[in-house]
Length: 114
Length: 113
Image (cartoon, rainbow over all chains, first blue to last red; front, side, top):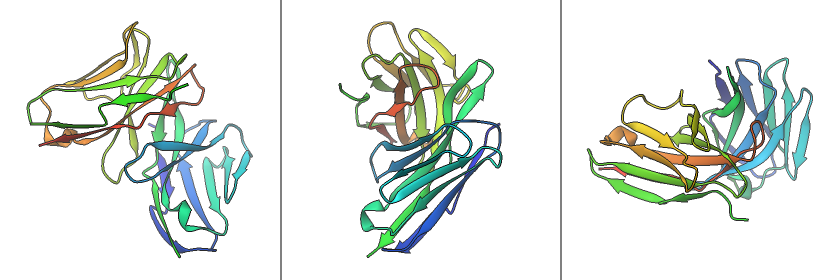
């Protein structure tokens, strides 16, 4: 059974600081997603990481994937208040009939204080 | 091109009633996924459907829950005889093909009283 673990689950940080969220997963998968969710809202896709060593950046967020270590990171640079949200990583399940569905981590609740 | 449309956005049901949640995928998408999100939790996969077929329902409770995606019309997630523990946000996602990125709807927040 595929398990996805994120840490930390809660993070309070000050504006201007840097921090990293970690996502470990338990079985082979070569597709990992990062999503953002604001309270009461749907999920916004941030990054899709498809291969070992993939690195993607958008503004103050950068995501990377190490498929050998089964680890992805989401790095926040010089945080601003607008980045306060819950961030989920999700890994594509591989079932007997092929890949389907995503297995999500529990999410990292990020609060950025002015 | 409208995104994934779910309705209703909020649904209140008394214990024992039925809940029907609808999901219209994006135009051109024939793959639909349903997920459930409990408060303060990540999303849990429930079921994966293509037109007229259930491909994987391994995440769906065996009793009271059913899903369909007919040839015409939206996908329906049906919960019979709802209980308080069914209260959650239910999200639908769609994709054009297998193994391509799925796009999420706004979700239906079900409250069982």
